[in-house]
Image (tube, rainbow, N blue to C red; front, side):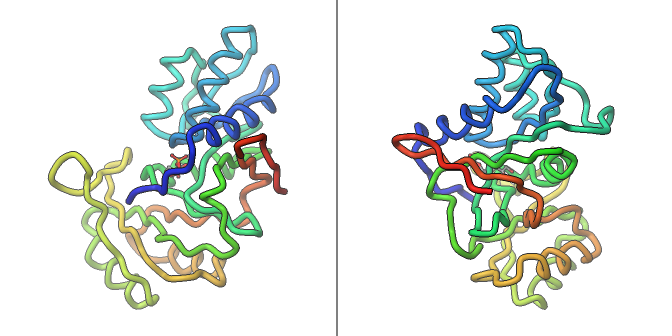
Length: 228
Ligand code: 5RP
């Protein structure tokens, strides 16, 4: 699944704006994707300038970038508290419900973002919508792909196994699982759908993030707007 391309300048503005919220001593959730990557790079610069923080990666990609730019890391399994998480989204509704998982990292992202005292979403304007209507990524145990596919159809969804872009075969997540991208049309009750998806046997995690985001920083050509 491709994320619609917003402008990189808008993504950078949002990422850098959110990185400015991080203060000395913070444990910081490091999101996945091109917008969160701008925040990680800004945090790397801040560490070089003397900021004392620890990052918690949400994916191998964010771990690798954090290492490259010099953000010290601590394992997710070793932390009990995260001060602030900065993460991107594929879609953000008016009431701050999110669809995430364009990078197939939503399982770890949800653990980190939900554990954060302050979860800050970074986005460009192409992600904003009044109602969520993009496909919902659902991470499944490989052997459960058939049974979950059928259960999704019973929920009036249309599941598609996510294929790898540069090689034959499916996308395999950092956790060794597969992703079904599930179309539901406009989602009028994200909380109800989130519960339905979470209770399907074989579903590891889905990309609906409801009542988790504290604020959304949206980058524009001339600045950043913050919605709470
Ligand atoms: C990864 C995600 C990303 O945060 C989401 O896909 C947004 O990515 P980008 O900032 O590149 O548009 O959920 O699983």
